Length: 377
Ligand code: KG4
Ligand code: ZN
Image (cartoon, rainbow, N blue to C red; front, side):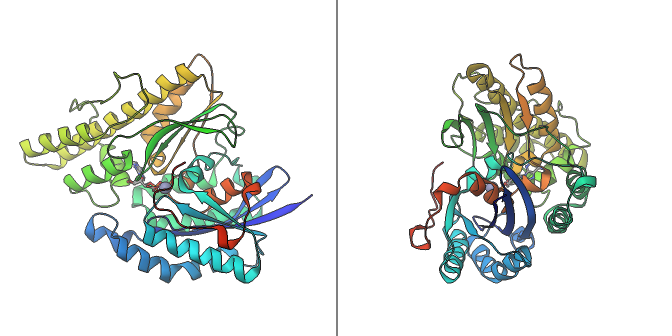
C-alpha cells in the first residue's frame, strides 16, 4: 500500500515543534512528536515575549527537526503558515521552505486552527498494541511534557499517552468543534474536510488568555491554565458566583472580559489567602467551563451534529473534558465525543501533520508559501 511520510513544523507562538506522520492508505500514525517549550524563557514576563520567542525558535528549529526526523525520509513538508506571532511563524515557514527547496519536496501550508481541529482526527490505540515507533513518539512527547507542565499535570498527561484508548472511531460529519486555546476561542461546524464554517467566536479574550490573566492576578505562575486547574482542585467552584456572559444570547459568540473584570473586583476586595485563591480559581474555572459547554450544547441543538469535538490548549483541562463529555452524553441526538490525547491539546506539530494528511491535494511548491499572522480559517 502507498505509504507517505509528512514532516510537520509548527512555530506559531512559543513552542518549537516538529513531527513525522505516516499515512498508509486511510491509516495515520504519529512516528515522532517533539516539542521544545519556551516556558522558562517567558515565565518571568508572565506572557509570551515575541522577540525572545523568535530567537528561541531560531536556536531550536534545527535540533527539534533533527530529533523528529531521526532516520525517516519525508515525502512532503507541512508547516503552520498562520495565524500567530509573525516573528515566530517566519522561522518555521522559512525553514520549511528552504528544506522543500533543497530536497525538492512539495510543501503544504496549514492554518493553526485547522491543526487544532485535526488533533481530534487520529485514532488512539492501547499501548500494548502500539508499534515501536509509536512508543518512541509517546516517549518523546512525554519528555517534552516534562518541561511543559507543572508536576501535577505530568501524571495525567503521561496517563493519556500510555493508556490512550479514548473515543472509539473518528469524528463523523457534520461535526461541531469547539476550539479553545490561548489565541482563539470559537465554534465551527465541519460539514466535510473542505467545508468548515465558523459559527461564532470570542468578541474579546480567548478562553486560554482568560486563564493566563487570572492566574497572573492570583499570582499562580505561568502558564495560567495548568496553574489554575491545579489550584482549583482543592477549591469550591460555588464559592463565588461569577458571571456566565453571553449564555442568554442565541448566537454562538463568546465573551470572557466581563468574567475577568468580575474576578478582578473580587480580588481587590480582600487579602488573598491560599484558601481564597483556591476558591477563586475553582469558581473562575467553573464559570469558563459553563460558558464553553453552554454555547456548545446550544449549537448542538441547532445543528444536530453526529460528533462533537473539543480541542485547543484549554482542552487539556481535565474538569472541562469530563464535564463536556457528560453534557454531550445527555444530548438526544446522541453525538460521539472526541478530545485529543493531552499531549496533542496544546501546541504541537503532530496536529499540523494530521491536518496535512487530510489535505494532501493542497500540496504546492516552496515559492507559493508565506507566513500570515492574521490568517483566518
Ligand atoms: O493551543 P495552545 O497551546 O496555544 C494557542 O494556540 O493559543 O493554547 C495555550 C493555552 C494557554 O492559554 C494555556 O493557559 C491554556 O491553553 N491551557 C489550559 C490548560 N493547559 C493549557 N487552560 C486550562 N487548563 C489547562 N489544563
Ligand atoms: Zn494553538
